[in-house]
Each structure stands twice: as C-alpha cells, then as structure tokens.
Image 1: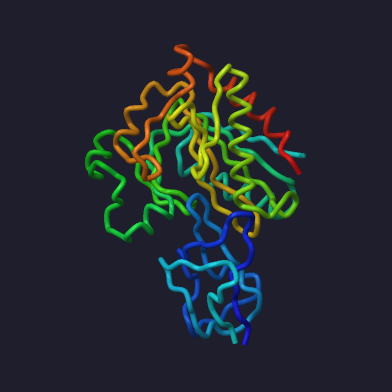
Image 2: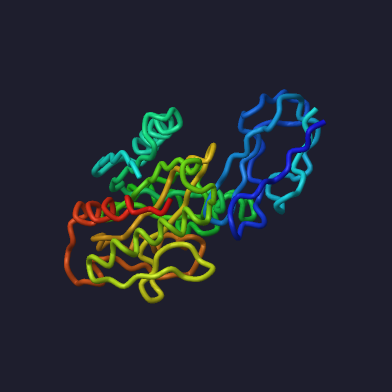
Length: 76
Length: 216
C-alpha cells in the first residue's frame, strides 16, 4: 500500500484545495500519470502518481482543503 | 537563461491555448529550455479553477452579466485550468504565457509568481510607472489599482497560462462585467496613467528584455 502525500510546493504554501481527481477508487493508475489536480489561490498543480497500482481510497475529496504532509489517497 | 520567444499578435483565445499546449510539449521534450508566448486576445472572459470551486454554483458568482449579454457583446466565456478566479482579456492588453521548466530553476510556485510580478514592475519602470506588489495579494498594482493579473497552471513542474497587463486598452469598461479575480478592485492601464497611447509591441519588447534577467 503506497500513501499519496501532499508534497512541499514552495515557500508559504501550507495548504491547497483538491480541485479534481483524474481517477476514482478501483481504477488502475500508472506511475507518473496525473493523479490529482490541486489549486492554490492563483495556481493549479497536477500531482503525478508516485507508483503504479489500484487507487484504493481517496481521503481528501474535491473542493476540500489539504495541508502539506496530509495523505490524499492510497494506492495498492 | 535561454527563452524561446513566440509573438502571436492579436489571437483568438483558443488558438493561443493550442499553441501553449504545443509549446508545453516542446519544453517538456527539452527542445526549448523555456518559452514565452506574447499576444493580445479577442475579447474573452476566462474562468479559473477558483471561480468554479467557490461554492460550485452553476453560474460563477463573479460574472455580473448573463451569458446572453456576453454573446451580444461578442465576448466569449471560457473555463480554463489555470488558478485564480475570473478575468477579462481583450485588445490593448499584453498577455504573456511563460512556459518555464521549473525543474531547471526552482520548484516553487509562489516564487515563480513573485518573479513574474517583478518582471512586470521592472517593465513598467521603463515607462516611468511606479508599480508594486501587494502583501497577501497576487498581481501588479499602481496605487490601489491593478495593472497586471496573474493565473497559472503547472504540470510536471512546467508552467503555462500567465499574466495580462493593461496597456492601451481604453475599454476598461469590460471589467465592469465581472468582479476581477473575485475582488472589488479598480483596474489601471499604462495609457490611463500616462495619458498617452503606448505601442503594445514596445511594452512586449521591454518585457522580453526584463524576463531574461529571471533569477536562477
């Protein structure tokens, strides 16, 4: 089981809004594929998957806020 | 810093998006280290992600007129993947899209935005305009009026979308159709401040000279 963790995105960015999941639980995702779109007030950022596998669970839903270091999802 | 410059002139918004995507791929492949697309747009209102996230309402709250009114005025309405809220683009504005590979610079989203603001401020200095950043806000300001707006997207640490500066758009009235960036703010233009028309190409030329000074 691999945890998808919100990484550092630069100084002064401590939280982002999850704006779009490219995959839903149960779907297969490949390493480096765009997994989730994150939004700060003036930028959007696509977080690629760090591993290949099945997206098991999404912890932070679209429209909700995540802090740096939070687990966004799990891939098995 | 090696930047490939592409000058599109007056361009339909969708065409510029297609060219951004092609240029993004050329930066991603390593053909260009970085690129800068400069253009002016036909009238268009774009909705960034913040416009859609704010309440997830059917109609964006910061669009103050109906879509029918926009059609009558021949202003297109487009949803885009950049950050930020709602903005207007039209002739008389210099719009720049830096397609920068942040893997070759610093992987810092806010630093990229702050450097873009500084490039605009230094460009405006050439025209004897003292512009500034505002703490806690994005964009470039002259006193309390906004002269340049920013909204970007980053994929695989390569940037796209960018910044629009009001140069000789005497038609700032189109901003009254929206709450720009979701805020109650007034807009300024180079022409409005100087009381004289300035060629967009002249501003673009200075901007390009300034952006190559981008800190590594």
